[in-house]
Image 1 (cartoon, rainbow, N blue to C red):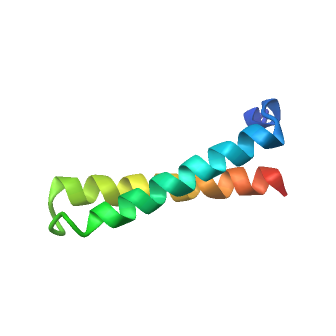
Image 2: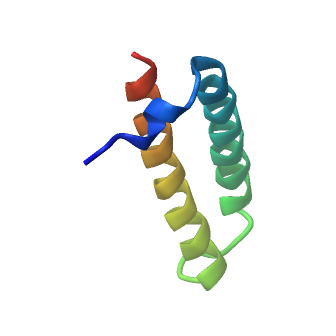
Length: 63
């Protein structure tokens, strides 16, 4: 499997990392506004998990 992140510069990856981290932070702040068990709460929880995975993959590529 070819690593498609090889097609990006470190500058692009760092910018993406900042955006992903910002999105995670915003989602975490919003999560408290929705009752646990609601679809909105589940959506945010799933989005945070996906963003955490993205963040880890980008960080791995930068090291």
